Length: 424
Image (cartoon, rainbow, N blue to C red; front, side, top):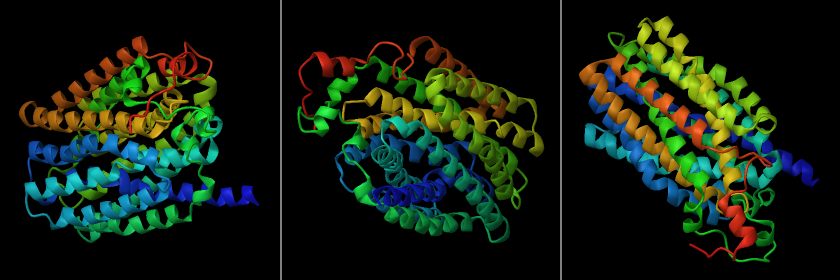
């Protein structure tokens, strides 16, 4: 009976990832199209608006991760965040000027910060560490399938009903997110396992979880944080820049072109995410992550070699490889680094803040470069950053898979030193 009840929660988690695709990230690329094609804003202004969400996320990620670690009602956090994002989607259309759009993006960024740690925590709390790699691969598979579905819906809505309907549709779809989250049984979520607590802590035989200072002592955490920042510095602005190129002189078709960009990548992401989840344990994390960096660098360089819609769509499909690998591995690597600390979700928040910082730098600086030096210069700059990130990760990041390399500083502190002090 318990296994059957858990299967209901796992199926609901599948659908939560499916519907959450547009709530979490699906509207971002369409925002650049909407502001460029409908309001005719320049690339620098569009970049500043898109970057506002990144700034908000950077500030919100740490507190969001801490909140998920602390909360005993993780699915409720997802439901509240989805409702706030829906409100923000409506606000995108209602905002009349740049300050209004920036405020709307701040709301969306702050609300969406709760999703990555909550979904990962719910997953870890239901399946446990040993089954997490495959579960994260499955999460990402459903997430990308949801992105394909929403991109199709948004393309049709933007082309036939008007571009504002992209954001109205996103707000409507949040109902599926909220319903799916409500179907997950709280009793199936082990809240101690969901924050990677040690066995002693879960049994009440040791002190509280690791402090933030303890996390800062882990060299692997620092290296991975910088790697994530560099990955998203190189990646985040590529799709919005492609969207702006496709929208020039194509006001009526720009939404459909953006949908095609997203769908091309998402169709690739679905199998890549599934395979990455299966290979993360036998192959290890590091070689797969390096492949993601390499594909990202190649993609940025290829954008400079052509401007036709078919060519740009073909190159954009490579996003499906790099993004899918990253989407699966970053949660798994964090779970490796956080094992036994009780701070899995706080650490997710910290890494997610680095992701947001990278996205902010990418959108802000790439928009500036594209405006002043051209789109090719912006793409080559992003490709160069990807190469730098790949080199840094290859030389500095250890393999985190169990049984590979030396134990982390946190693990050694747990086993050899005094118990952690509570930072809460």
